[in-house]
Length: 223
Image (cartoon, rainbow, N blue to C red):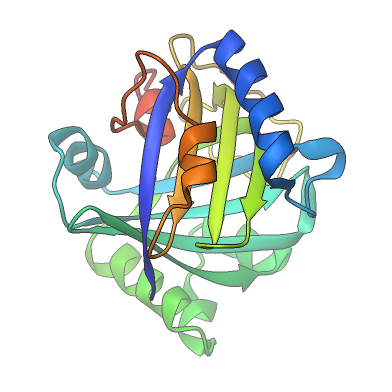
């Protein structure tokens, strides 16, 4: 797994407009984003002791979290993702799931997971069986993504964060979510070995500093 650098900034609506204009001049919209944005639905896992949540809130340096994700209500491409944090760097592993596999997982049928060739699916199986990991809550939001080739840079603006409270009805695109009331707009910047100065300058905002933020933690404030 390759680890990357990551900045996060909490911004406001006027910042979003300014950043959209700046980034549009120096970077390219993500080609997978129709109309420059897409809707993301994630389902996060945690155990009965809320290990993932507590490690995030406590700033534990070596931590991980599992989630399911799809885009724009399209169930034809569901991903299982594991995000890891090590020494301030972030990494991600992923594996594809079918609707049938996902539905089985959500109803507690894990038997199929050990029959797959995916190490990540088998890892999740072990942690669900022996560490009590389970689906915890849905997180919905809108993302505007930009990419820049040198440095393998990806800049995203995330807003409209909504929580499913205790709902895990992940496969129903129409399942009810409610606004995470105090959640800000989030600017994220990710890159490999270096961050080009043209992007560094484009994302600079007066009075904004890199800080930790978790959409999962923001949505867990409600349950």
